[in-house]
Image (cartoon, rainbow, N blue to C red):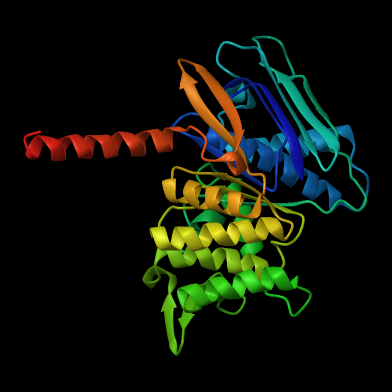
Length: 352
C-alpha cells in the first residue's frame, strides 16, 4: 500500500508531502483545492505498477516512461504534459512509496526550440510477485454510459471520459468467478445486495447490466443511481477485481446516495479496509466524515485525514487522524455556520 507521496509543482500543488498513510485515507477541501488531482496521481502510479507487474518480461526505462506518462495523459487529459506543471514553474516532480518501493517521475516544461522534452521515470520496473491493483470510482456511474465511454476513449481515443472511467469499464466486463473470493469480501458484497433488495447483474457477455429484485428485472435507466453505485462495487468483488491488496480510490462516494445509504456504504468501506483493501476517498459529505469518525473511535483504527485549503494560488494541507476525533475542516465549518444562521433566524422570529 502507499505510505508516502510528495508532489512538487504538480498542478495546484507547489510542494505537497503526505506521509503516514493508513488503510483508509480521507481528503477534504472546497472545490478547486486539488482533491481529485491528488487521488488521480496516486491512481496513475498504482495502475502503472499494476500494468508493469503483469508483463511477462522486465520493463526498461523507456517502457516505464511511456506507461506512466501515458497514464498521466489519459487520467488528467491535459492539452500537453506541460499543463500539469504549476503555473510559473519550469518543472515538476512526483514521488511516492508503494509497497516499500520508491517511484518517481520528473520532467521540464518544453521551451521554444528546445527539442525533445526531458522526462525521467524511475522505479516502475517489473516486480515479480507484486500484488498491487488499483480501482478508481469516479462520481458519475458508468453502467448506463458504457457505449459512450467505449466509443470516445476506446475506439477514437478522444478526450471526454478519462481513464478512471475507461479502466473501470474494462474491469466490469470481467465475468463473476466461481469460488476463490475471500469470505469476508463476499460477506460485504452479499450485505450490500441485501441492503438494496436485489443485485446488479451483467446480461450475458454484452455491455448491458440489469437490476434484479425478486421476480422483477429493471434496466439501468430504470434503476436509481445509488443502487448502481453499490452494484458496481459488488460486481467488482464478485469478479475478484476488488480483493485484498487492491487500492480503491473514490471521488465523492456520497453522490446520489441517501444519508442512510451513505452510512451503510461508508461502513462497507471500513469493512473493506479491515479486509486488506487500502482506500482513498475525497468527500464533501458530513455524513461520510461522521460515520468514519465513529468507526475510527469504536475500533481504535487510524484514519489519516488531509484537509486542503486554497490561499491565492497556493494549496495548503493540514494532516490529522480521525481516531483522535473530528478534525477541523470546511465541511464541519459550514455545517456549524448554517446551524448558527438558522438559530439566529429563529431568535429573530421570536423577537429575541
